[in-house]
Length: 448
Length: 65
Image 1 (cartoon, rainbow over the protein chains, first blue to last red):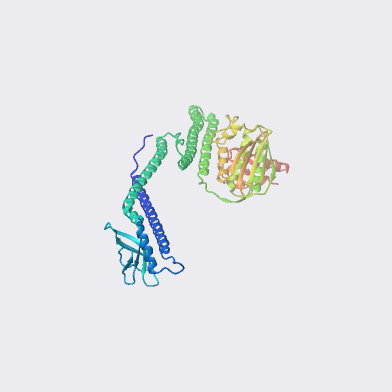
Image 2 (tube, chains in turn orange, brown):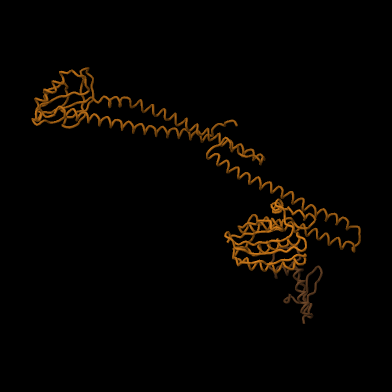
């Protein structure tokens, strides 16, 4: 699969995400910088306090006087130690009593000061000034070198962070967009192939991961279902054409042989022609009803319905029919079970199924109708002790125009069980065929 | 049929008004039930229902005892 150019929207998205990422990184850098600066300042203050207290320490039990401190400063200077700190003692009038640094008189406590080093460079520093009892001022000054250098590199650091974050953000979003586009390409390719008519095409999932794999799997499941439905529709149409062609061909044959002969002979022909017409019409009626039910557009009268009463009524009506066909119908245990259903449709459902028993089982077959209450709702069970159906035929006969193995020569639209199933599904229930050993059991479950 | 005495009642009329079925059954529901009814009536000694082939049934008021 060739990678496509990114759609325009995704490119703009990459820039936006890159800029956002860069800004976030910049803000984070500033926070880090401020925190570092704060910590450095705190450490300088701690050092100032520590060294100040060392010089102000009591001398032989007495608080250190100006003279003692001046002597301590002189001693420190004598060491010529290289230090980032320096000490001065200023008199009440601002005169320098000890120390070398020249600075304006700082206020007592911590303050920022500027001073000129011996190399004539202006430095910034932090000062801690302590007023002595005699009015003179003891000042410790620390050159804030770390803070100064930190500020010096700030613009460069900011620029570097911003630039690298922008680049990283752009690269990350471009990569993300590219990976997304690559994965979507699989879906796109499959969709295009299906649009061109290849219904068996599926999205290749082996190179997909995470949510893309989950989405592709769910789309593939949808495509499986749709392919099934399209195939069923195709099969249905060709079966319909075939089934209508047979009675129509016979009808044409009958009518062409009717012309030359007399009226007396035509009487029987017309009766047979009428029968063929009736079977064509029956197929269309059944198809229309099936279509109505499956699209849910049946003008319905759904109301609370006692299945027990209805089943008993149908059994009473159909018992003579089964008896005429040499069989028998018994009414088994019938529990009262009220469900929401369309009485007309449920009547048709049960009559259709009992007619199936009457026409498709040999004489001597006994059918039993019963109503049970189950956890999932009310179940109407029609069981017979006839020859039954092999398990592969049980799933086949539910499809439109499919018939049982023994019914090739018999009349019937081949839609009876499809309509029965459509009626049960219309009520939100299920219709299942099972082995009654011997015979067939039809279980219709209606939700309570 | 009593309300329609001496008039022809068709198979479809019976289906719709007696059973309330709006669909066309493929078996002889009406015929089977009608013959059961006639058997019972003959057992009682009357046979007022007449079959009109291709049309329907007529209840003969004169034949009711």
